[in-house]
Image (cartoon, rainbow, N blue to C red; front, top):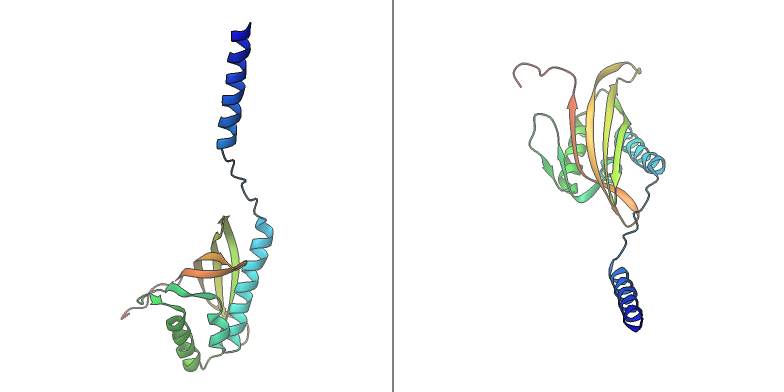
Length: 162
C-alpha cells in the first residue's frame, strides 16, 4: 500500500512539473473588420494625398525601409526614394487625374497584414481611365500598420515601344 502511495505521489509530482514546463501560447484573436477599416483609411489617405498633390502625405503610408515595386520600373527602395518618385509624378501631372483604392481581400496574423486591393484612375470629370490591382504588406509598428512592401499592376495592355 505504501508503495502505491509513493508511486501515485511520484506520478502526480511528475505531472505537475511537466504541466508547469509547458507554456501555452495564447493566440491573439485579430479583429479583421477593425484591421480592414484601418487599412482602408490608409488607402483613402494615400488617395487624398495624391489628389492634393502632397507627396509627403502619400509617403506617410510607407515605412522608412519600404520597397515599392511598380510595373516597368526598377523597385524603389526606401521611403525617401518612394517620396521623391511620387513628387516627380505629381510635378509632371497636368491632367488632374486621381486614383481610388479599395481593399478587396485582407490576410493578417500577428503583426503582419497582407492586403490585396484594386485601384481605379479617374479623369477630372470622373470618367474611368484605367484600373488595376495591387498588393501591400504591412507591419504593425507602435500599434499602427505601415506599408513595408507594395506592388501594383494594370489591366491595360503594355503599349508598344515601352
